[in-house]
Length: 290
Image (cartoon, rainbow, N blue to C red; front, side):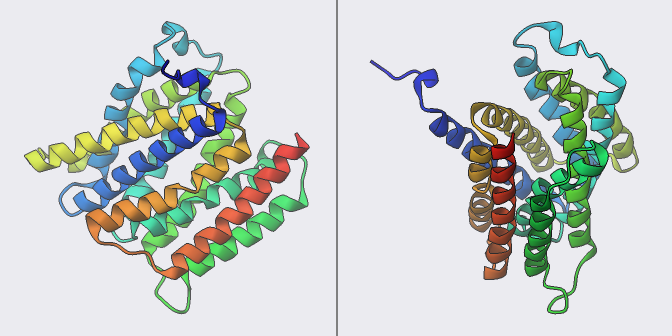
């Protein structure tokens, strides 16, 4: 008798969803880097949000139209603006920064978010959060290596992007008190798409056949990555998800190496491990206190 998906242990389900999530977002990042010489970043951002929205609509409406019922729709629409702002930093940075380096830096968001929550959401201050932030920033310094190589504007964009996305996470945390995750995703993309369209207009041009393929691929990977991330976070404890979330780095490194020939150096791996260790230890500690 075949084993049903619901009978699969939660650890295995979480692993599957997070591996798929890492693969989809790695493919999206590789496509962005590949197409950056032909397609404007704003055009790719429009595809990332618009086509992802179309991919997600059947998933979001699987329980009917209640997904559109929101106590605070105006508040949720801020998420769309922040997502587009975050997309701008990520898409522009990937023109120069290797995919594995960008993925490693993105782990800082997990550390920055709880620290900002102390000031924004008035959560109780805990020493472990500040220690984790200090260690995580040390890991970022290992990757960036100021003084040994030039710090590009794009790398600074990624570091800023980690803070921006931490703000995004805080708004989601505040909104989740009276909104479902499906409603949050719906309003995020519903507000992001028109904003992405507005900023894309000045550089908008008809892509080549190859360009259309890339844009469709970016949108599909973004949509599937969002779905698998949602399913992954819903299937296991936060500390467990965090452990599997680190798989994004080897997956991104493998995909970029196979397609782009980019081989991350040892400093990227060392810095990423330092950042991840700080984030995982903090998440583990926070989970025990709740």
